[in-house]
Amino acid sequence: MNRIILIKYGELTTKKSNRKFFINTLYNNIIKKCKDSNVIISKDISRMYIEYESLDEELVIKRIGEVFGIHAYSIAYKTLTDLDSIKSTIKEIIEDLDKDKKYTFKVETKRSYKKFLMNSMECNDEFGSFILKNYKNFKVDVHNPDLTFHVEIRENYSYVYLNEYKGIGGYPVGTLGHAMLMLSGGIDSPVAGYLALKRGIKLDLVYFEAIPHTSLEARNKVIELSKKLSIYGGEMRLIIVPFTKLQENIYKNVSENYSITIMRRMMYRIMEKLTSRFKSLAIINGESVGQVASQTLTSMSVINNVTNIPVIRPVACLDKLEIIDISKKINTYDISILPYEDCCTIFVPRHPVINPVLSECIKMESTFNYEEMIDEILANLNIITITPDMDKNKYDDIL
Ligand code: ATP
Ligand code: MG
Image (cartoon, rainbow, N blue to C red; front, side, top):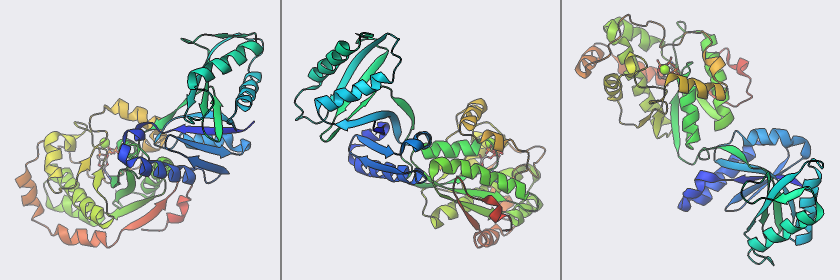
C-alpha cells in the first residue's frame, strides 16, 4: 500500500498575500530537514505530500514534528482518483484493523477536484454503504464515531486516512525575517530562541564569553544548546564575542552595584552593531520581568536606552516554571542546568541596583574608553556554523 504523509499548513493559510512564499519556505525547510532520508515532496495551495521509503517512516515523522509551520499531518494512503481504487484502499485500511472488534464510523469526503462524478455528500454515502455492506462489525455514528475515514479527492490522486496528528504549529522559519538571539548558558535564552523560531524568525546566536573567567566547558554548553535550537531553526551561526577586557574594565571603573546594568548596556551596544553587520532586524533575549535586578522595568528601560533596535523578549511574561516546562520539552533543560559559570554570573555584585538612574550610567561610562574596546571586540569575533549533528570538538582550540 502506498503510504504518504499529508501535511496541513495551519496558521500560514491566514496570510493570504504571502501564501506562496510561506509554502515555498516550508517546502525548502522540510527538504533540508529530511535530507538524510529518501523523500519526494510535492505541494499545492492547501497541502503538501511527502512520499518516502517505508523503512524511513519513523524518521520522517520525527523530522516533521520538528518543523514550524505544520499545523497537522496524517499518514494517508495514496490511490488513483476513481471509485474502485478508493474503495479498495478503504478495504486495505479496514483489513489492517482488529477483525473481532466492533467499530462505529463515519466518512468525511473533501472533494477539491470538482469534476469528480460525485459530490462530497454522495461520496460519503457511497463509501459508507461500501463499508456497511462488506463489514458486519461496522456501524455508522456521525456524531461520535470510533473511526473517521477521511477521503480527499484530487485530480490525479486521492488520499484516504484515519487519524490526524498535531504538528508544532507556528510559521515556517525564515518567513518573518532575521534576528539575533543573545544565548547564555541559562534556562531562559534557549526557550526565548525556540519561541522566536516558532514565529518564523530565522536566528543567529550571540554568546558573550570572558575567558579565562569563563571556561571552555561553558562555551561547549552554549554550543550544545545551539545544536538543540538548530533542530528547529536549521543551520545557524554562533557568534562568540570576546568580552573579557571590556568586562574587566567595567568592574574596574564603575560602582559595583551598577556593574551589571552597565555590562548589559555594553552587551546591547554590541548587539546593535552585530545586527547591522549581519543584516538583522531585531535582538531576542531571555529576559523575564522581575527575575533578577537587571530585569525590573526600570532596569530594562535604562539598559534598553542604548539602542533603537527592537528587542523582543519572548519569555518576558512567563513564570520560571512555565519556561522550565518548555525547556524540558525541547531538551535544553538538562544542558542548561550544568554548573559552568557564565560571564553574567562571575563578578556578581552584592547589591545590584534595581532602580538604576540613566544619568548615573552615562556618567560612569564616560570614565573609560569603551568604544575603542567595542571596536576591538568586533574585530575579533569567532563564528561557528551550527547544525544539529556538528562535531563541537573541532572548535576547542579557538580562543
Ligand atoms: P538565561 O536567562 O538564559 O537563563 P541567565 O538567567 O543566567 O540565563 P540573565 O542574567 O537572566 O541570564 O540574562 C538575561 C538574558 O541576557 C539571557 O536570557 C540572555 O538572553 C542574555 N545573556 C545573559 N548573559 C549572556 C551571555 N553571556 N551571552 C549572551 N547573552 C547573554
Ligand atoms: Mg534569566
